[in-house]
Length: 335
Image (cartoon, rainbow, N blue to C red):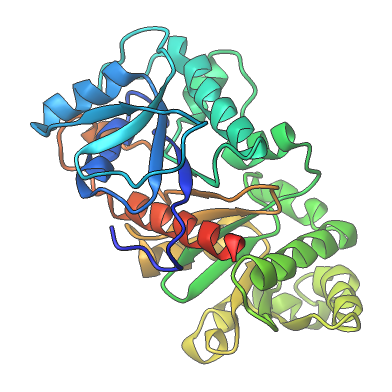
């Protein structure tokens, strides 16, 4: 892959995710392209070799030495930090026995980033349901990494082409969203988003469009008062600190080309307010980026796709985009 952002060779940790899903075959497709970065898979080697055999593609797993200088990844190879499955995985068939394996790969990769052994982390799709069925409370990558890093607040942002959409709330039932949108939470999230756009993406004066919560952004209080009592006053407070904020605007107004042209990012109040637009625009090459962590983390924008796992038809576009974004951010950080 030809990556933008300079000549540095970043060392990128990669977790393929749920072993019964499409993650292992996406790893093989990623290996086939090669990379100007050093890609280190945190996975069971036999799982990846099994996926390569199913795809009729050669795969050479190179031993990872964290003490050695980073090297580019030749086509057809991946560097490997072996982590053993509890039980051999079968494509398309979930097994809760391997839930701990999935979380162990995430822990190893994140702790490696915290220890500066890796410059960034790219994650494949996990299956939250099977992890919870194994008796492990798990709400998602974002929350897992925040807990591990001891960070109070992180922000989920997805990006596709020129559109970036961040979320105030993530994996919450809709009935709980309004209570979760508080002035302190909103202030924290906008501050993290603004800081990340400036320092990670090198946008000198970011412009952030902010959605209202209610239809028509509350219609002057007739359709809800969150915009009047919480969102609007918080935006005014942050504007006084020099942050350029547009809104709150109705989502169906903000997600139009003239309004989006004014914004470097959009802040949506809840998951399904912002992400359907983002995924319609960029599904298959969108990237999930976690802001506010002490390390760079990107991910695919899709799930485990158990229904097509092992069939060799999974599209690796989102993983390629996530890897490219991680490499670019790692190089920008090094400047």
